[in-house]
Image 1 (cartoon, rainbow, N blue to C red):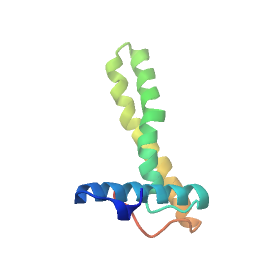
Image 2: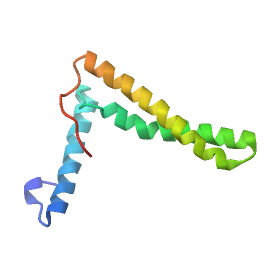
Image 3: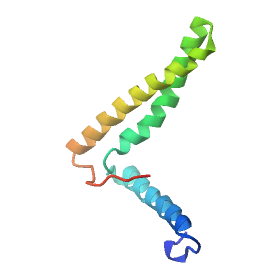
Image 4: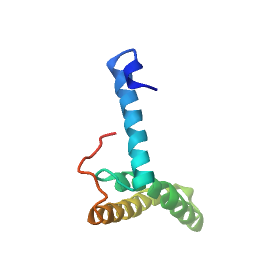
Length: 105
């Protein structure tokens, strides 16, 4: 969608700007490996909970016989994801692939 053709309230325009901004950042990250500040940390925050946290919690819940322990895996996975993302952000900074901006999404 063209931003100049957006009609409606400021809320609609803000949403469209965020969508277009995300597309641009995604293309930069994918094609050129150039990312804004904390890009990988924000990405791996969610991935850590889903990729690591849920399986850890499920394994813990099954081994203890109480699936209420499923929730314990989420903060563990979140911590793992934040650590991975921070490491990737540091590597991008050292390699000069990090933009000097931070996007609030």
